[in-house]
Image 1 (spheres, rainbow, N blue to C red):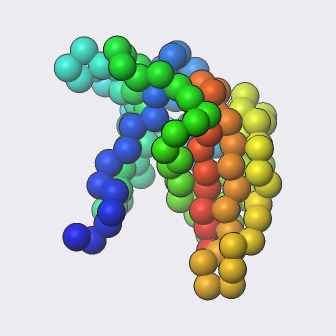
Image 2: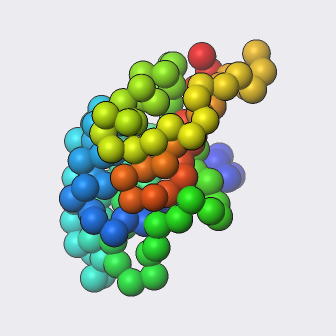
Length: 122
């Protein structure tokens, strides 16, 4: 098994708002599609690796509690974290060093009320 995670889904009440938020924060276009009665906005840069989606539909309820998804913060998560509040979210833990070997992390509440984290080596 190359990765413990191969896909993730982040609940959204308003998919358009969530796609706009993540597009600004991650600096990428979020493509949307309806699949099986669910509206989805795909968070993937087209590279190999783990991908995920924003999802609006029955059974998907945004929450700041429960599982915590760590998104790739790039070479320095400060860049993405700095865009959170301007995009409509709230930083709840600024860039924080874990260790020299592991890098840094920071957390935010997204436009939908989910608690999400970033991780980066610097």
